[in-house]
Image (cartoon, rainbow, N blue to C red; front, side, top):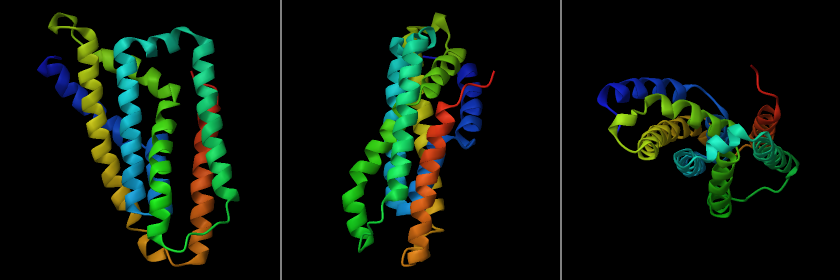
Length: 209
């Protein structure tokens, strides 16, 4: 278990990083505005699962493999970018409207959750973040390093979903009264699609050194 002084610093750093808008938070915001608070919370849960995957990967060394192998990094990076761009374009081009919010939720919650998982899992920058960030708070004399990394990653993940659920509820409050507007439905289709495409393009861009 990490020592208390390391945990205090970890909490401070984690809060700063979590509240800084990034691809995952933008995804939650887009879903919340586009489909309501339930979809926003479900997308946050998908991000939660995706971060758990990265935590496990960091604990067993997969993230180190991505750092060491340019080919592995590029495969995951561009697969994730292509997936997000595909989702965005499909959303923009879709003209099918659901008759009620209940129908929309029932037909899309599973997809919304899985897209949240995949958008997080297929982000190699997040994997590299975990391998670079979590070990800074590990103390080798306090036990197994892999277990410490897993513990820190789980703490970070729980803090993230609490923040993202709050963001989803807050974001959705701006869209509830607009759900019956056809103009708003067109806007949310373009907004959600544009955010997804933008995230994909951002992920595909070369790293800034």
